[in-house]
Structures are given as C-alpha cells and as structure tokens.
Image (cartoon, rainbow, N blue to C red; front, side, top):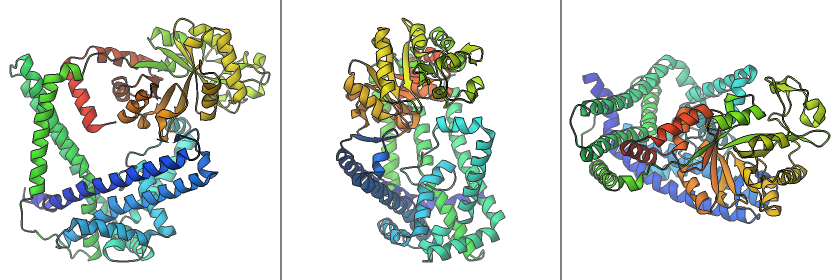
Length: 586
C-alpha cells in the first residue's frame, strides 16, 4: 500500500496545476481554432466555393488562397504543438523540479519555444506529433488530431491484401521505433535548452542505455491507467447489480439510475482528460532520472488544498444533480421513441448477396433496407454496367476494365454465379421496392455519364426512386445545377468549411466526419445526411440511434437487428444513450 501511495503521489500533487493548465489551454486553443476556421472560410469563399472537401481539394495547389490555407494549417499545427505538448512538458519539468508551477508562464514559454522548431527537424517533429502519432496510436498528439485515423474504406483494402498489410505493418513498426528512440527529444530541447539535433542524440543515448527500464515503466503506466478505468466500470456495474435487488418505484428508478451512470461517466471523462498530462509527467520523471544516471527521485511536497479542484468537484456534483433532474422531468420529450434513421445496402445487398447484382437488391428488400447503393461504369460501347473496382479481377476473375469491354463481353461474366447487371436492370429490380443510389464511379465518371444516367432514370420514370451520388463533387454540382429535379448526394470522407451549403440534396459523410454538430448544420439547410460505411455493431447502434437520415452498410442483417432493438427501448435506455452520447460525443 505504501508503494502504491508513493507511485500515485506525484500525480496527485501535480493535479491542481495540470487542471488549471487544461482549462486555460482549452480556452486559448478554442479561440485560435475559431479564428483559423473563420479566416479559412473567407479564403475558401474567395475561390467561389463554400467548403474544402475530399472531392474538391485540388484548388489548394492551384490558387493563392489554397497556398495561404496550407500555410495557416501548418502554423496551426505548430501552435497546437506549442500549447498542447511543449507547454505541458515545461510545466511537468517545473513541477518535478520543485519550482512553483506558474501555469501562465509555462504556456507562454510553450508558445515561445516554437521558434526553435522553425527548421526541417522541427517540421518533421510537428508533423509526427500532429499526424502520425494519432494514426499510429502511439505517443502523444495534439487535441485537434487526436482522433485522426485511417478511414475504414482504406483499411478494408489494406486488410484484404496480405502484401499491403505487411507493407503497412513494416512502415508502422519503423515509425513507432523512431518514436521510441526519440521519445525524449522534446524534454532535452525544452528543459535543458539543447538544440534539436543534440537533444535527438541524447534521447537515443538515454533510451538505448535504459531501454528495459523504459519499456517496463511505460507498460506499467498503461496497465495501471487502464486498470483504474476498469475499476470504475466494474464498480458501476456492481452498484447497478446491487440496485436491482432494491425495490424502487418507477418514478424513482430513472433518477437513481441516471445519477449512478453520470457519476461513472464523469469519473471516466476525468480520467481520460488527464491521460496526456499524466503520461507526459511520467515521461518527464523518467527523463530526469535517466539524465541524472538514476540519481533523481521525486521529492514529496507539502500538500495544499486546491480551490480549483474543489470548485471543479462541486461543479461536477451540481451538473450531475442538474442533468438528473432535467432528464427525470423532461425525459419523454427529450428522448422520444421515434427513431427514423434508415439503412441502405452497400453495393446492392451488402454481405448478404453477391455484390452489385440484382440478387443484392432482393436481399436489401428482404432485410428491410430502404435502398440499395450501386456503382456504375461505362463500357467501351457506351453502356453502363454495375461494378465497384477499376476492373473485374476481384469479383469475376477477369483483369479488364469495364471501359475495355463491350456490353456483350461483360454479360458473359459472373459474380458468384450472378450476371453483371446494367443500370437499367438495377432500376427495374428496385422499382416499387427500394430506392436506388447510383454512384458515378471510376475513370469514366464524367459529364457524359451524368447526362446518360439522368436520361436513363427519366426514361424509366424513376426520378422519385433514384438518387445520383458521387465522390466527385464537380459531377454532383453539374447535375444539381442542370437537373434540379433529380435527387443528388455528395460522398465525402473529409470536409472543412460550410459543408452544409454544398450544391446537393444530401451528403453522405464518413463516420468520423458525421458529428452531431455536422448533422444538425446539414438539417438546418434542409438537406439529408447519410453515414458510410457503417458495419460494426457498436457503430450501427450509434448512427442508427443518431439524427442522421440513414446509413450505408454491408451489414444489413445487423442493421435490421439493431433497428428492432432501438425501437423496443424503454425510456431509461433511451435516456442513457442520449446523455452518454452528449458527454462522450462521437
């Protein structure tokens, strides 16, 4: 027990200063990001656009506004490294050095330290911390990009090809190795005033000399931190279990259950919020010990009550009481049982049928999907066939593009025994059953394809049963401008700016982009929003329980099951989902 107290002591005594740091830097970085987004918005509008998105980003490299946006983005990454990481390292150094932890001074020093990073080495460090570290899931990262990850539609390709998977694994291992050996490069630069080059060499020396001890301490830190979260969750379930044996009236069950849940949620939020500060505090302790050849030990300081910690604790209690009371009184109004989010089968029938075939439409209809999403490409003789990849090798075993084949040749192919359909055949299969979402795909996706797709849909008189979608914003803009009577949808896996004002009837966003705020802003413009490609059970539950109009999924059987679960929830379950979504976000 004494050893545990000694291990916890530095974190407990550093808590007031770290809490103040968190609050102040949150305000500063929020103001910076507000100014950054407003300025970039002005620059984007200066090019005649309303947003920067994955399907319309080349103007960044062809206009002066684009180059200014790139420069502002790099400056923002530098600024956030200074605020989120450098200032924290300096603060940890002062705390452990026995100095008075002047938080404002450390924040100022963190900002001023950026001038030492205005060189090629500094740029590499900033880009690693900002972009690579969150993707690798290793080390420290800034608040803006801490949730950055490789989109699932890319990882699905990587996982499907062993050579890709091995290659990515080797690259990740190399980057993580570099992250380990240069782990103390910031500490040497910020705490001991070394140059980046000198600090890098010093970091390699320290890690090489103390590698076993370093790995042991870092693993122990992660295990214990994870264990704290597990204990909180276990206590929550234990209390819920005990509560189940206590007879409570229906009116009392909701507030008691909600209060218990909120206490656990607030504790977990607190623990997660302090992961980075505590992690950097641990790294700083190791750096000081290694730098002094083991001669440094943390010196206990006089305990002082912190008004800020007390105020935050009181605020959390008041918030729990307030939220519990509000939910108890207005629960039915706040969390109605009226979930209307639909699901659309990806590539015709998801995983329930051969992809992009008429059999997929049958599966989508059978599993209750509201629509089928397909991909069309043009043949060499001008017909439109349904296929996702650049060629038919994966699906039909023929290494040829649709544009290299005639319709007759394509019709000889089979996808798991099913013929490759034309756009016309898919329209007929969907008529009166499900909406057909037609993605203009591949190298033949051009204005001619847009014109032909509109013509074919009109010939079949299915304007109300088909939606034209694409990753290429210029095509969606073309259709919406010239054929406003047609339903259009823009597919994007990243967007910045006034996304809701893009020229389309609906937006289909990748999971990470589809935040509650984004969904709200799109609905305020009178447009629909869909989320793609949602397959895992937890993700299905999250987005089918959101205000999104629909999701695109391969797992239509799972989506049907989740939809049934959501429609059968009691008020208590709906309230839990709503409050936890508000606290933890997506």
